[in-house]
Image (cartoon, rainbow, N blue to C red; front, side, top):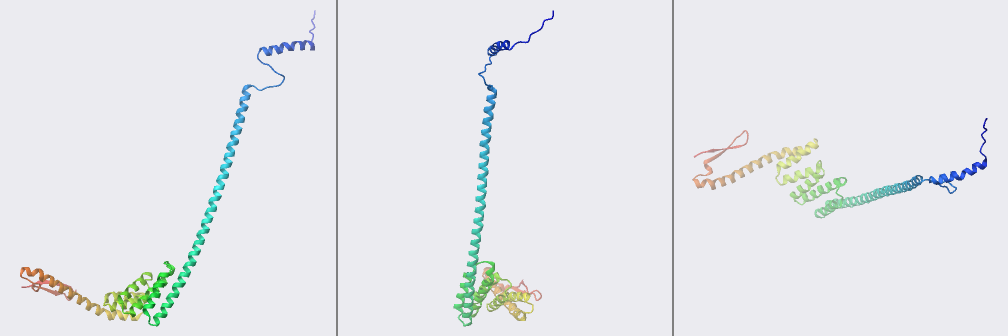
Length: 277
C-alpha cells in the first residue's frame, strides 16, 4: 500500500523553530534580533581606522613640510634679490664717488698747469700731489696719475732737483711704460746727474717707440763719448783705490804695487797684471 508523505504544515515548522534556537544557543551562537560583527572583524576595522588616521597625519605633515619648504625657498629668493639690489646701489654710489673724485683731481691738475706757467713750481707741485692723492686708485685713473707725476718731474727739473725728477718720471713710467715725455725728462735729468749710460738707455727706448725722433737719436750719439770717458775715469779711480789697499798689505813684505804693472789690452779694454822687480 502506497504511503503518501504529507508536507509539513506551518504549525509543525513553527514548533520546530524553538528547538533550532535552542540548538543554536547550545552551540554558543545567540542573536538579539540584529547582525553583529565577530571579534576578528572588529579588530580589522579598528586597525583600518588607525591606519587611516596615521596616513592622514602623514599627509598633513608632508603638506606642512612642502609649505615650509616653499616658504623657505621664497625667503631665500627674496633675500638674494635684496642683496643684488643692495650691491647694485653700492656700485652706483661708488661709481658716482669715483667720478666726482676724478673731476676734483682733474681740476687740481689744471690749476697746477696754470701755476707752472706762472713759474710757481712749488705751488704747482702741491696741486699735482693733491690730484694724485684724490684720484681713485684704479686702471681708469692711471693715466691722470701718470701725467701728474710727469708734471711734478717737470717742476723738480725747473728747480734743479734732478734726483727727484728721476723718481717722479719713474713713477709715471710704472703707470705708463710708453710715456715718451717721462722718458725724455728722465733722460735729461740723468744726463745732468752724469748718469750717461742710464740716459742713453732711456733715449734708446724713445727711438724704439718713436723711430722718427731725431732729437733722441742725436742725443744718443752725443752721450756715448761722455759715457766712455766716465767709465775710464771710474776704472782709474778703482785702480787707485786698489793700489792703496795693495800697498798697505804688500808693505809688510817689503813690496808695493809698483812691483806689479797693469797692462791694458787695446782690443778688449781689459787689464792684466804683470810682476816686475
